[in-house]
Image (cartoon, rainbow, N blue to C red; front, side, top):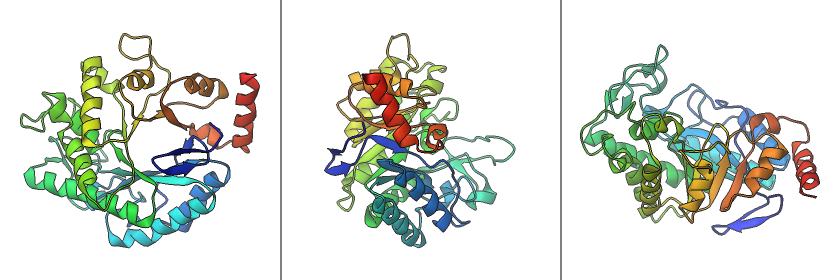
Length: 326
């Protein structure tokens, strides 16, 4: 995992993938700041092979926090390009996570009544969302497509669609937040994934976007509502058909057993796809990392923020893994 490799025609210096350890460092309009560039660059300088940005809103309507990174407007491009160049100067690759808050925001933050699959209020700091209609769907798809185009234009190596974190696409996928009875309702897996697949397919159909598409998601909260291993198989199949290149499943702990099997979610996905995987979930020790290293098809390993905060973490981790492999 510490040696260079190539995937999708991109040369990575190692398999370590890192998110920022601090978020919401953009200005009030979502523009990259010097503080953000310094923070990301410091992680890259320490040895990270790939940086993945925090969630970047693809539309003002989908902004979830003050200081959140944006990629919705032309005014975001200059700062994003500076960020990309700074990371690549340190020898790392960089991807950007594209997101839409859906119902998980407020009018104060996003500038309008939040929109989601159904009427929903996440709590005191949020506003009751309205249900998206056909016009909203068309706009949301275009927002993601245009964001992907901007990402490629400024030099990002890949994009990641955020299908988790209880944001819009996760809301559509969850029976808790989605009580529609139309083609975007929660009655079937295909319906729950319809908007996600339309977004990915629309990006794939754009000749101006050729960089890989990663998909971030979690299913453990859905299991409580009846999500089964058969549903997982269908989910992977639909996402693959739409054009997903990389699967990034999240678990509270990367090796937690899933369903009634002896395998983790990561292992089960690896058995049902030929796509490369991102291992993510509480990887904060060499011992856990060594367990994950034995899983087939894993291309990248997301290290826990507490490990990344350790001084000289790269050399520490490399030595510990080497010692335990002897």
